[in-house]
Length: 380
Ligand SMILES: [Fe+2]
Image (cartoon, rainbow, N blue to C red; front, side):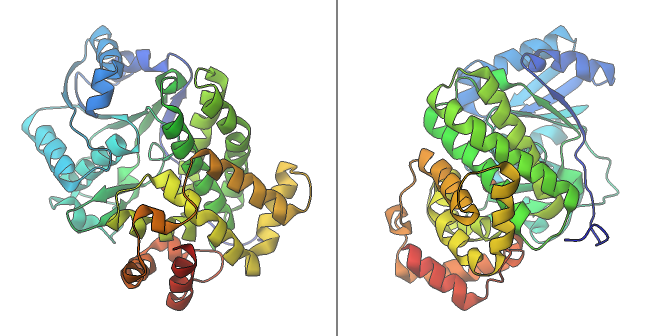
């Protein structure tokens, strides 16, 4: 793109980064005059003692709190409703999402319900950028690295019928506290799958149709961080430096989503997750080589630029393909959608859902229905 083209910048709120930062939580709220917080988290973090660490930090700052600790791995509209009802039943000054994308997205869903007065699904397809309702002060403390939900405008939720995305500036956390210590005990598989998600956000943002020279630089940095640190974090989970690198890649990936959105890798992934229970990062890994080859037909220059800018050796198109599929392999993803239980009979429905996705619509190479169907057929 030319620098004289049109683009928009959307920045997330404040961020604190570094080992031990979570222990400052109470002081941060107290400084803002917030004396009572609702924490949204999941049962695993309660059991692992991560919730206890956040609670101790709040206590140290003299901040009272309650916790909704029932978030599911794929957060549901029922989770959202329960968290929102708890918020409305109490008199809280701050909403704190503590967890992976699921807890942060549940809190975003609750924010949407508070702001619109309707259930979360009613926000699907609308931009929640303005509201007359006062905004709850919203904090995010990620405990996984990859979804980018800590810095993005969107949330992925599941109703009984389907997975859907809601988005809007008002859903973006106002403060993110990133403490890589919280990710040290993440299991290997989850480290790989979530970290790969961050890479996919960045490569999707960089190669889609939305031009943004500032976010391009952030996307390149996120990809560089993921390529450098994810293999180390997967191999040696206790490596704090590698954990910090992926945490930063996740955050920057989320910022890129806020500026540019993603691409067809995500656009074709969400429908699969809608009808089969599957790990997001693994489905992305199965889809990525197909979408890259599809996009290379018209967007080769853009992908080659990534290799050049990141200093990858060899033929630029092959180099970024190999680097990306190398990261995908860390997730242990199957090669075919059939391994997730998807059959050819599912393809019309998958295609229909993929077409509705903003990610698909922004893919670097246009994705008309016939091409989406052919892609799914080739992946079965
Ligand atoms: Fe993602």
